[in-house]
Image (cartoon, rainbow, N blue to C red; front, top):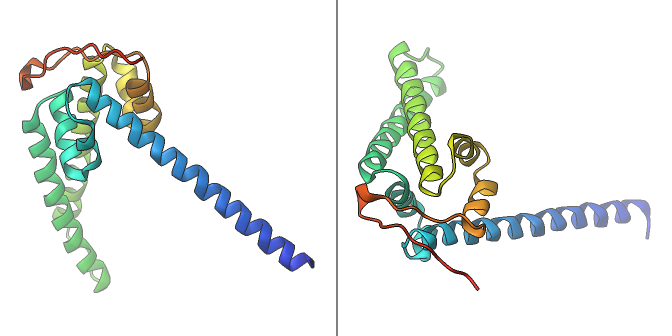
Amino acid sequence: MDTNTAAAVGIVGFIMGFFFIAVIWYVLCLIARWKVFDKAGIAGWKSLIPIYSDYCTFKIAWKTSFFWIVFAVGIISAFVSGNISGYTEAGEAVPMLLSLLSTVCGFAIMALNLIMNISLAARFGHGILFGLGLTFFGPIFYMILGLGASEYNGNPDEGLPPRRVMYV
């Protein structure tokens, strides 16, 4: 085998190995989120549906009314971003109001998600730092919640009682 072939095989092997690890990581994240839902008394399969899983996460952690706020602000942000890209493609200056509105939307979504993650941590008996971990290192902290010994303390605002789930 010449050096070019060996290098190509090495690169393909590296890419395949990386892909394999990424798939395993993704499956672990799905399982962890499924278990978080299960611990809260919501069917785990609901964690697989993209927008509905976020709605359920807000139900588990905080209030679904805040989900609708985040959803509406996200739609506004998408519309504003589309308009901004129209200006940049035409080579025109972006109006200050659009830039400001886009920034405000982004910060609003970030702040509401941060509060939701802190609330989710509290619902499982953890503190603010754990909520920050959920925000910035979500997959790892979801694995700790879902696959660890954390117990759901309920969300009376959304009618979810505390649950103690025993896994054998």
